Length: 254
Image (cartoon, rainbow, N blue to C red):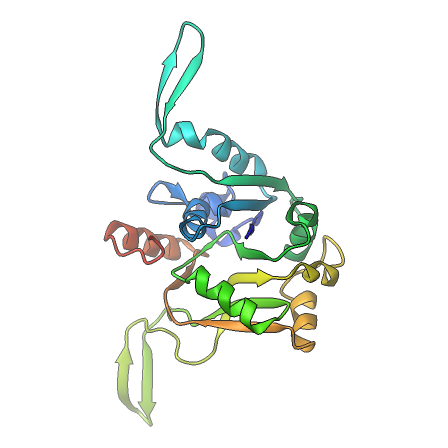
């Protein structure tokens, strides 16, 4: 199944990094978070990617054009300019990079990819979130429900300690627990091609009219994921992901 990744945002809350690079190219232990997301999908056999680019699209294109040489040893014959790659990465991905416009909204980006996706189901996510979601189970769930769209619902880790109170008495204290009430959009979708019919233009925000309309028609189903999920919106988020990787406790790695 093809994997569409929305990788065109500005990342204004990560301005320490995104003045020079797009948000999906901010690194975790030397590799862009976009690479980590793709590696997770590829681990489940999904190796055909379509990247919806926008802000600083040339940075993403340049990275993937040079990825094999950057992440591999190679021999350069200066007499004739020939390069022999000693590939250590074992990456066999097929990647289509599409500049969907710097000001295009999320729905518009998806719509612009229609001709590359074709009339078939596809997976969709954002270029700034990591999870240990099991994509095999996600797809099985989607197929079993026979709905137009499946969204992965998650309960994120709270940023601050959670207090349970009985009057003035603290009955429990949890430092940064998983949120116990309420689910949010975790950003890992499985879509039927009919989703394109709900997107009008470049100005369409996927999470508004399209998803609201699909939901009202009873065609939006939630796959509840109780495991790890973390977006990278701020430097604190980046540092947390870096820490998990450094401690070899990165749940998204297979």
